[in-house]
Image (cartoon, rainbow, N blue to C red; front, side, top):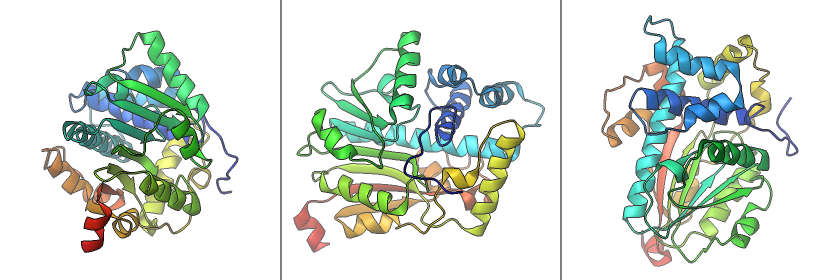
Length: 309
């Protein structure tokens, strides 16, 4: 079976479980002092997926070296990218950007845990059930917002851009965009291309984007992806890799952005570690380096500069 445009999910089903796994990665990293996210663990426990809560406990107390290296490696890579995006957003704000959009925000808690300059608005987009779950859990925790947060419950396969404009998004302002763990097969190719076109169309010069992407799944990535999901299934999670991602060839995000007026940089996971000042610590195995996505950052150029470049 393959994903369909009618698929839906929450933090305990389908693609939504990847968001909960990402929160587990941030919780583990926070417990190790690698990342600041005081809310991730509570969100994972509220979702109630026993395997993910045990992952947090195993990583916290498992000093016996018996943790699954594949799962531990994926937790580490997700957390490192989350830290990279944290720093990317902070840098964008220091450069004067006051509008951020987090696409497929999942259980992201950045509006609550990062530093934001006065006057900034953060738009979060995900399915209504995901937005509602996260908002309620954080409200029950007494979490305080550090920014004007505008959460929009809509599927990115629908006309999310019109909905975004209706709630105040201003395409005359430079925007910092985040597409974290999204452009790795979770959208069909035509929807991913449309999303990139829409982002480009409403990005004023000086806008920035951070994303990870996987234009094609190599045979090794497919094998490791299946092995990864098989671990979940053995622990009682009803997950089918073919129902999570679209098996197709995608447009390279880097190439698309570069061809449409963006100045692009692409990093490997090893280079990403160097960027955040963590070269060599923690170690990334060759196996995990090979199956990791590529990490893209981009700056929207003025049309005149783009045409002369």
